[in-house]
Image 1 (tube, one colour):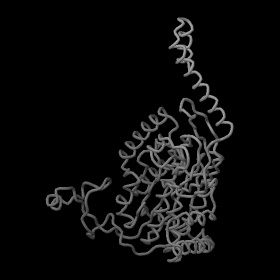
Image 2 (cartoon, rainbow, N blue to C red):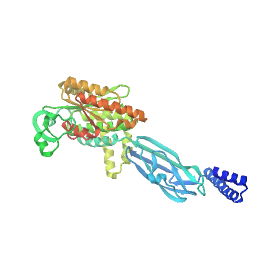
Image 3 (cartoon, one colour):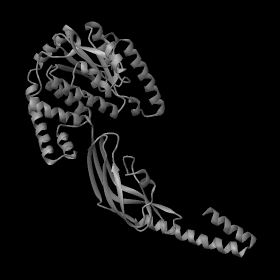
Image 4 (tube, rainbow, N blue to C red):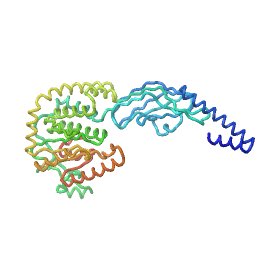
Length: 434
């Protein structure tokens, strides 16, 4: 517009009829397009069908849906960061006038409730010189559930089928300090170099380590911290926690846990029975996530599985709720068994921490290691600083993370990412899949 006005000024200044005529024509065209854009913004030239859409899914997944758009002019959509066109090319493209199909993808990185009252569209004027922002009537509501709920559904299935897992102490074939040879496996972080199998190493050209069956029984003590930098990190730690409890139930390994809440408060989940520990842990995790057991029925409806499978999963949730009431009847007896394991020093401790939050679970694990000589595994998310609010905060978190990890390794702890926890813990719970 400024160039047209400048050309018109030059035409009047130098009395050039050609420049004056062209400038006047272009100015009239621009004025017409400007008025057309204003008319479009007032009237609303874009509509979509269906005008209402709902979605529920698990964090990390995405949900795509199609809308039929009708517009008098070419337009582009301006959407939220959690609701985008299905491809980057579509995000930058213009949708042509008339009827067109819009594919939107809902896949936020964080769990929670999402809603939208309308879409915004940038509509071009008739000749494309101007654009106007138009509100498109469209209502969207979405719910994103944390991933630990999927792990909990798997645990419900096993617990209801087995009656809650084994209870008390039983004879176990557990890898650990002992004399009876078990097998030879490839070296993994945390293995002692004193148990290197040199012959197998020479044959395979990779480090191989001997493993032996531990003498006597044992138990797994989980120290789980809820003080993580953000929602994604907390969800990863919670998923690993639920999977650890499930693996203990499947292998018959007695288990207990301490959950560290924000503010320094500790909640001890007394029990060597996996059902007792899982019930107490889920109460805390659901409370922290502002969810209830009723939300498990909702998340089942979002899974892309046959109807028979969904019905079975609903039965597992109902069976688990009945099992919880029975499992909570004898907490004092379970507490006594737990103290016996700690005094005997047969417990293996697993700390689930981001390494950048509270140091309380790490300090407790180191104290128990020194007092009882127990094995301590520390499992952490691979990059907890992704939940930082700024680059400066992420840098500080990473420096703190690296220092804490190095200090724990120097104190004799096995520090591994969550993705390698199952392999590192194969010596304690062979079927662990955190």
